[in-house]
Amino acid sequence: MLSATSRTRSAGGRHIPSYQCRRGAHLTRAAESLDQFVAALVIERLSRADARLLLASEDRRADVEALRAQRDDIAGRQTELAGLFADGAITGPQLAEGTRKLAEQAEALDREISAATSSSPLAGFADAEDVAAAWTAAPVSRRKAVIRALMTVTLDKATPGRPRGWQAGTPYFDPRFVRIAWHV
Image (cartoon, rainbow, N blue to C red; front, side):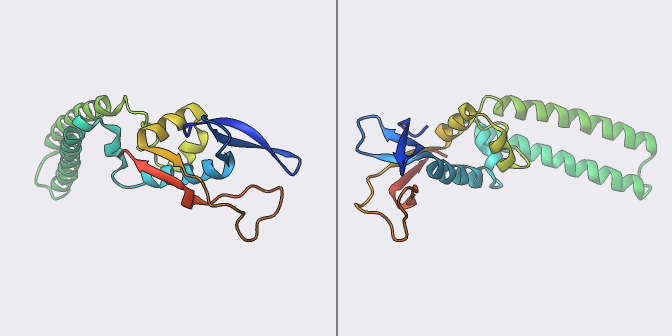
């Protein structure tokens, strides 16, 4: 998950799932705290308004933005069409025909947008109404794919000693020693 192997280490007689550097035991971090930290970053990033744009590959993002703009325009025209009918400016058959044509155009754009974004590992997250719920429900393999698509997580060596207030047998976590390199 984080360029490390998962191990358990003993702390005060209990085993704590941990990440350990592949090159040896010179760097070990408790998995739960680190996972929570990374998950919070992922959820925050995928909850932003522009997250849906991440679904498209780099070369398709501009295309997807244009397709979404066209889709938004159609939604506006559908609203305008309903207003014209309400004002008596068009008849029921005209409303029905206009609605049919706009719905066809909208469906075609939705298919194009879906095709452009479906291969992304972020699908189901960046377009989720509740990103945190989608994250929680996803299997670990999907979470790993999302993390790989979004960022590189690097663990740096911490300064010697334990932080103030630390109690023996409990893990501790200091985000100052975690570097995040965002890909998007």
